Image 1 (spheres, rainbow, N blue to C red):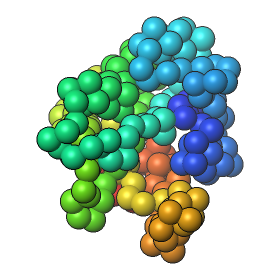
Image 2: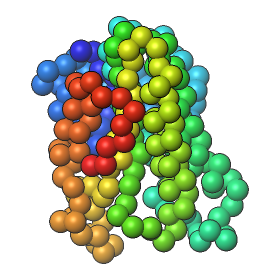
Image 3: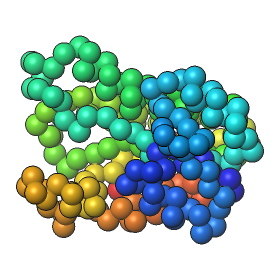
Length: 200
């Protein structure tokens, strides 16, 4: 298959590329590379699909957004919420809507959410974004034409990310290895399910 991976230079994106490249042609996309895409700039998504054709799958690992709100719920600004929605939620929705028009029959879209075992202080914005993505994917799956599929991977803590935070009290041993998470993405690209939210 020909697979487009957006966010290919990030921790998860690099692992997903490594996992898929063994069996598929992978087109790596990032904000600073070539081809490039920025989820906050819909015109860059249009340009990307004009540049890259013949796709069987689109995988988005570029779901950046604030891990936690910059203040408690009472202190968070409307702009902070709007920015978070624009970057991670609306950007991935815009990507999926465009991918539908450019994927080959039977192709797939895999987006990235997030999940935590329990409520996270300051995490209301992240919870809103991730819940929105889950609702979108679950319902969009029933609307897709031509046998297209859409799924969502919702990773928890990534071991390699936590290891970089150990100096701030992180515990790498508590996270899931990124290679294990990457295999979840690959299984959705190569499988037949749709409308699934997979927690990794």
